[in-house]
Length: 159
Image 1 (tube, rainbow, N blue to C red):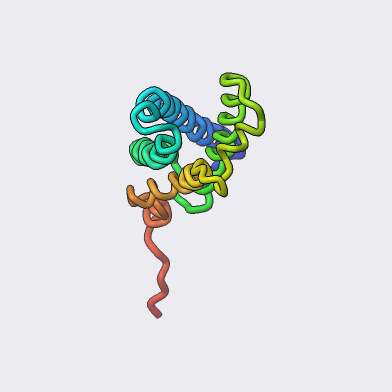
Image 2 (tube, helix red, strand yellow):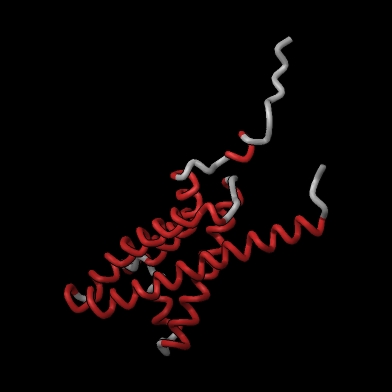
């Protein structure tokens, strides 16, 4: 028997609250990572190098947190995992725009510069990694398609 409409809606709400909750954890970690980049790495190696390195170290942080917490989000199919990643990218772009404009009082042009891959900014690569991080983590944890394998015996006709 299938789930009722109300039960499915409640399950979907819980699912997306978990996905957004994990994104909040990711942004908290990335904010601390950004502070480390500005206060330590930039001082030691210069801002340009620090920005480049931080994209890769930030991607590693994202992967480790996602790998640790992906079981909290009950997604098992590629489409849903990519939708979670896409949601994280959209939320992150909004977060970056708001942080740059309202917390750091940067102009829109200065903010846009961080997204300019043609000028050597690697933030778009970090966002691309963020898009795929739920899928990568689920694959590494062996979670892709496990729901179908546990659904019951297969119906193979041997006649």
